[in-house]
Image (cartoon, rainbow, N blue to C red; front, side, top):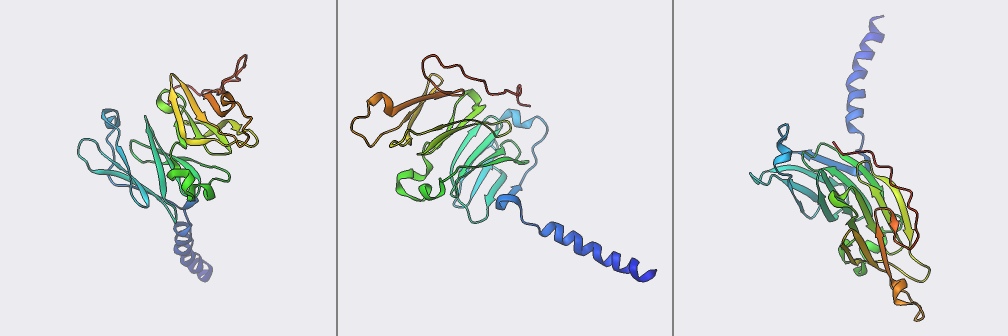
Length: 225
């Protein structure tokens, strides 16, 4: 009886080591440098900075680092800060949302189909214009790429709608602007017969803005905690 017990005891450290050796999903490495006191995040959310391989958050008062987020073999191309959120576009076409105040978690990861190769090219301009808020406080986030515009509910990363580019046309994320609650995105077309009105798309948090539309809603989950 003693031998099986001894073997079981020897196996415990091995099982524990195997558990800790498991690779983090998506190659995530999230490091919290300083814990945030309860309620302190209301006084001021950290400033976001991109380094070569990571996103870093710094306390606006002390200037000390709060957290660092990196992914193995990937580079952060763009960051977008919003109340409670730190959105990042990565070089492999992944979009992530990190808890901005304390870096406590990466809430969600969303892959943008077919974007990795485009992001490596000069036309992408380093991902300029890809991340666009659709509402105040960025409760809805648009991810704009040449082939499609996808809108996500930021509280949980739920995909709410997708708008493909017209055949023979492509969206240009860097040529987009948000004004009066509307995101305008250039969609140049190869055909010289294409009208100028077809080469400029207007969207909001419910999708493309066209006469007589009946949006279905975004399944709001109520105010974020």
